[in-house]
Every structure is written in C-alpha cells, then in structure tokens.
Amino acid sequence: MIRYISSLITTLTLLLTSFAHAQFTQPTILQPAPITLYILTPTGQPDYFAQFKLIERGRQEYAHFKDSFAHGDDIADADGSIAFTPLNEPYQLVITSPHGYLTINHNDITPNQSHTLKPWKQIKGKLTNKNHPLPGITVNVECLLSDDKSIKNRSKKFLAEYKASTFTQADGSFTLNFVPDIPVDIRFNANLYINGYRTNLTTIHFEKDLPPNRFQNINVNLPGAIAYGRILKHDHTPLTDYDWQVRAIYNTEFPTIETKALKSSTGARFVAYNIAPGTNTLQIYIRHRLKNNRSKSISRTFTFEIPDATGPAPIRIPDFILTDPLPPNEPKTPLK
Image (cartoon, rainbow, N blue to C red; front, side, top):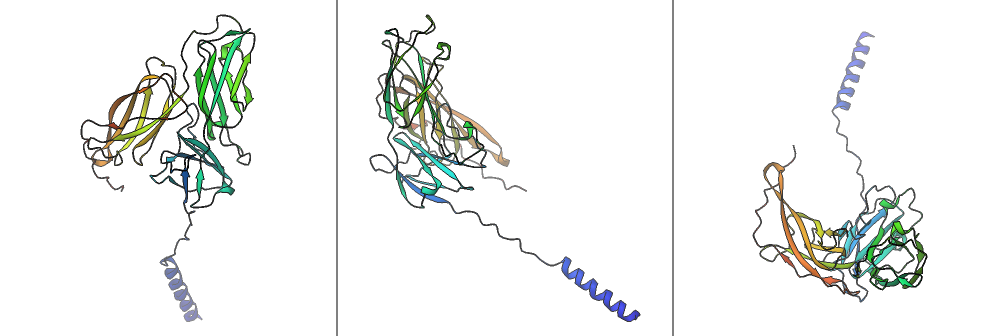
C-alpha cells in the first residue's frame, strides 16, 4: 500500500511538473483588414488632396472639423487612394477636399471602389434692416457632414461638423463659396439677437428690425477661401522623412479670423480653409529627432497672397521650399 501511494505521488509530481513547463500558444486575434477606396474630383480626376475622417461608434477621437472643418485622419495618396480600418459598425466616412466633399455610409462601401466627390455650392445673401444695408455683420454657416443617427451617444465634437464664416459688404451682401449642398444653419452676430435657421437655398434675403449701432462697418467680402499646396525641402523633394505640422496661419488685417490647416506625412501636402484675403503667414514646426529618442522643433515661416475677390475655385499655392538643408534625423532607439 505504501509502495502504491509513493508511486502515485511520483506520477502526480511528474504530471504537475510537465504541466508547469508546458508551452501554451496564445490565441491569434484577427485584426480587420484595411479598406482601400479611390477618391475622384467632381470632374473624374484622382484627388490626392482628399482628406478623410472615420466616424464610428466607440471611437473617442476629436473629429477636428469644428471651426475650420477641414482636418482629417489622413490624406489620399497620389492616385487618390485612401486606406482605413474600421473597428465598429455602423460607421461613416467623411471626405473633404478643395474640390468637393462626400459622406459614405458603411453599407455603401466596397473595397477598391471609386467614389466621386460632390462639388461645393456657393451661397449668396443680403442683410438689411428696413431696406437699409447692414455692412460688417459676421455670417456663420454650420452643418453636420456625418448624420447617421445609428451612431449614437455622440456629441457634435465627435462628428464631422462643417463651419465657415464671412462678413457682409457695404451693401449688406455676403458670399460663401464652399458650402455643402445640404440644409445648413445660418447664424449672424450673436449681439444682434438673430437666431439661426435651416436653409438649402443658394440666395438668402434676411429682413429683421435690429437694434442700432450694434455692428462694425467693415467694407470687405471675406468668402472663406480654400488654399492648398506642398512643403518641399531645399532640394525640392517632399518633406516626408520628418514629422511636421502647420502650427498657425494668420493675417494681420483680420486677426480674429481663425484659419486651420491639415498636415500630411504623405507627400508633405496641406489644405487650409477659411483663409482671409491679403497677405497670410504660414508657420510650420518640423520635428528633428536627436539621440535617445529626444527631439527639438525647427520653426519655418512662409507668406502667400489671397486675392480680395476670391471666386469659387480653390487656390493652389506655389510650393513652399525650405531655403536651407535640415539636419539629419538620428536613428530611433529601441524601447527596452
């Protein structure tokens, strides 16, 4: 009996030792494959300035569309292709470019398909008070480009919100050249107590009794221009091997107009929306990688002109070229 118990203990010990040293293979977690689409301009050409934003349930990212509306996750390649990996359904893909816009629901997406952008429309209007023109009134246009009600529990900042602004001219007229062809909210100076209203018209005439001396006389039409271009190194090659970003675009004549731009690591391209007329200054920061994964920022500034009477066509800015070579990046230090 004692010999049997001893043999049993030995057998159990060997089994436990073998179990403790056994190698277990972790289950493989399959990641969804990226989806590739091809984006075309309204005239059917590949749009390599198209930007896109993936809007889906559970992804808590700021959409970066508010105020300037034109920031996105990424930018298309030279053939107009974009690639994204949705994590949840339902989702929407919001695409914008200097040439147009498009919102695609997830059930309308098939890999490797081409999608043609819808062209922007132009809105014109006039503000009067008892048939007297109101110059210098701020006009704001707002709408949501992602409108799928099945994407629930989201505030506006997690969706793709379009917003653009302009001023009325001396005769009270105003023009907005880049507006999506959907109903939008039109809002005017908050201190004039005019509420927004929904419209899909291209010509607006608004008449309301207003308190006097509540507006500033600015005789200028600011249609919210779109400009786009590239940042090149001193040897005229794209700034693709450095991390960089557009930090500011400012205009001394219109310092209150907020303009923002998208930076892209693909082809060093950028798109800027809501740009004021006159001389604008573009400031970029370039990240120079040092040893041990440290870095420092290199600042560069450029200037460009926007005509006063900007039409509905986007403005292609001449390439910005760095005047001096950048210091080489140090190799990345592997994390321990």
